[in-house]
Amino acid sequence: MTEDPEKYISLTEATKYCPYSQEYLSLRARQGKLKAVKFGRNWVTKKEWLEEYLREVKDERFEVEVQKITGVRPLQI
Figure 1 (cartoon, rainbow, N blue to C red):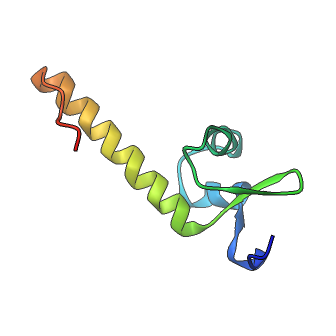
Figure 2 (figure 1 turned 90 degrees about the vertical axis):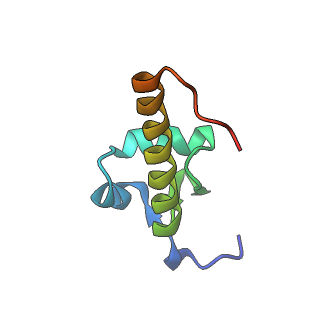
């Protein structure tokens, strides 16, 4: 891999910036929901990627709440 490893943070470190456990972040990385790469056996991500994931999760939760309240599914653009 040609990317600078110092730009990455471990998923353990990423837990300091969000309410999720390392195990959950690893699952989301394996599912492709959280942008991450593997260095050897370990998943790593970037703060920017984690912030992007958190924004997406927030948006999805908001849409679900709107749907529960209104009974109307938001338009998919």
